[in-house]
Length: 211
Ligand SMILES: [Zn+2]
View (tube, rainbow, N blue to C red):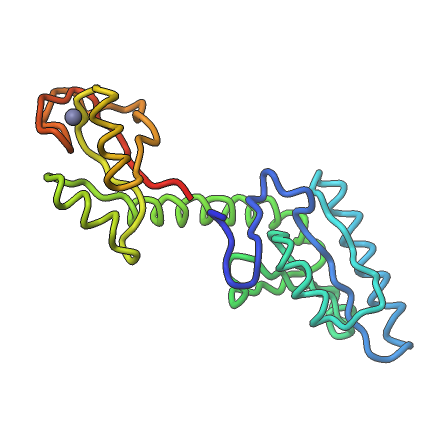
């Protein structure tokens, strides 16, 4: 839910069961052997480098395979076509930006991939963090608190001081359906007026509605 996009899941490389999928592409039967040889060679090099790789030999169209692996969130696709087989190269396509294709010699694929996987991992983390930040609002008053929770466009987390009284939280829940999601480990320190009752709060908390 955090990392997906319109094409489906986006698996962070470090936890992806398949980190790289190789899609061999040929039209004519006589192109098949050269493509298969190169695809197998690249697959072996990646396995040797400790990368979780799979080659897709199904009898399906390349476009079907591309969509299928994007849906499943595989971080990198490697395309190997007849011209690539001729030139001893492969095309790497990162799941996070399919326009950022890289054409590499077959020898450098296994060297480049750990780096590319690390970049994808970092990109997903940064995008998730930026999204969470954009959906986290600090509020100064209870009116503002209610306004944000009622606004579908801004809905998300609301941060503020809390008095520590369970009864106060229960009142917030009764009125807005929001409850405290967590007390962040990194507390700002000091104190401020409770988001709801205005009494002194020393705990910085995050409220949200559950769905
Ligand atoms: Zn309170």
